[in-house]
Image 1 (cartoon, rainbow, N blue to C red):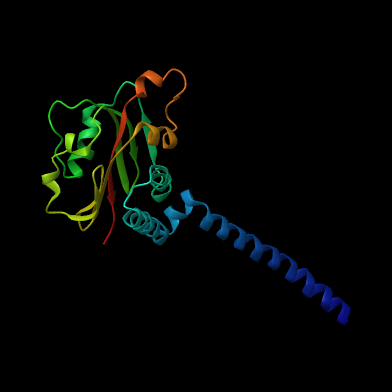
Image 2 (cartoon, rainbow, N blue to C red):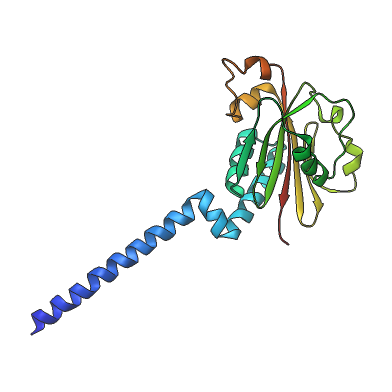
Length: 205
């Protein structure tokens, strides 16, 4: 009789054991897969933003490769890439939402747009090698500046918006940006060009 009871209990425990392990595996998978976890667990997305800003403030530098990873995992979205330029109709709203004013007669070629629920950005190729040649920096003097160097800015536009702007060298662009073939057909397009990025992050307070 006891043997039958033991067999019955084992037959009940085994399926339950498997279900619990499967549930734990799925939970761990969701938690440790960045593109999924940030969608399901908002606090993970917030932590990624805080860590990125803290690292940038601490090093007084926006690491281009870390930014690339942050943009993709903070709020997964979609890219629009063009080697011939992207319409101002698409890029202008991002620039406007950043609260900046670009200078006239700029040599800027927008080549990449990223859109997601919490982040929008536009990437340009340019021959200009400093932000003050591109942006009227006085326009952001009344903003809460989190980081400012010669070619990097992070500031709070308002309580729900953070803006990231940076201008990186050709070598930095080659290390971080995988959209161009820097050895063959795209060499002339990117040679001696700088990488300008304007990013708008929307966060709920």
